[in-house]
Image (tube, rainbow, N blue to C red; front, side):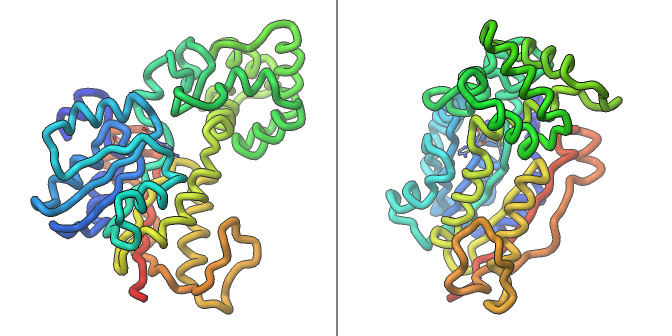
Length: 315
Ligand SMILES: C[S@@+](CC[C@H](N)C(=O)[O-])C[C@H]1O[C@@H](n2cnc3c(N)ncnc32)[C@H](O)[C@@H]1O
């Protein structure tokens, strides 16, 4: 872990995630969010020579990092993909129903936030991009240029829980009709001007940036797709460990785990997943956990982390 900390990257809730995976030395594991490989390296350190780790990341730079860092690691393979395509990736490797543990550490990595050129941060000026996979899709600037005012308002409201969504959406449309909003600083200034009141402890642009990031990367759709495929991928007694960083993500994970660990006659009606043909396919392992006081002191980013664990029931 020392070299990760030195590089400004701390794998969040590392001990809890490794404990949650209950790693078997000869097991098959998936790290669905490689990032800079903090969790992957810890998983590998628990595996014997017959163990195997497949890692996924949609970010080209993360994939290059893995290819370099893990070049001499025969138990490891990195795949450039979204985790929403999990079952395709796993079936191409002939591993459907054979995976002993699936880890998903959601959100963006420190290198993504810290590099101004990626456009995730309102603290540094850069192009308003925000795509985790810059090899495809539409940047935040392009999306803001083309979207309806009403769609912008709904994204700010639903994904950012932004109370001034209407005013900010109107200001964006007013501005873009004169010239495109191309940089993080332009967007931040516009949000500040459109927000009549400010939180004392939060930059006024925080919520709008979160909302746009979620929209540009279809983050909630991705989590839902990943969870929908998790049961297909996991072996009996396989573990699912998810670390989320805001309530919108955690709500989806919590409802999925609860839904699939219930009895048939006890299912909620409004779940965003395929209704389980057979409930009780999962067993909850412990309660939701937060980062320890020690980790909070070392890494403020862990403040908003929630980790949940479930186990695939034998069937
Ligand atoms: C919080 S970081 C993971 C950090 C990692 N656990 C570590 O210790 O270095 C999240 C990573 O997941 C990737 N990611 C986020 N959503 C993804 C998705 N839908 N499919 C694939 N990768 C995704 C991001 O590109 C980022 O590199």
